[in-house]
Amino acid sequence: MMSSRTDTRESRRAFLRRLTGCLLGAVGTSAVGLAFWDRHGPGPGNDSPALAALRDY
Image 1 (tube, rainbow, N blue to C red):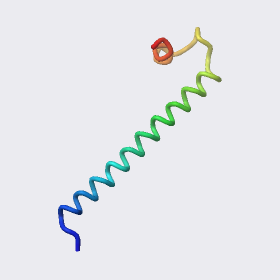
Image 2 (image 1 turned 90 degrees about the vertical axis):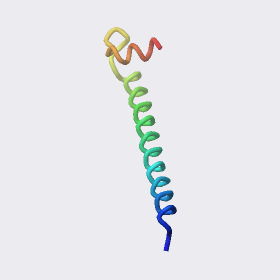
Image 3 (image 1 turned 180 degrees about the horizontal axis):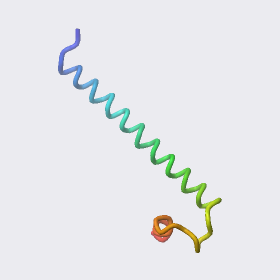
């Protein structure tokens, strides 16, 4: 039988693992989406303000 402290540590570790996976997935999806938009989206004159700001940064 595990102690309450070990249960808390394991649940915290599992939560951080899920959170890290979620953040990495979101960053990867955003990078792929921006790369696709840059190649197949409208040209520099028709960019959305957010994409233009990212490109200027």
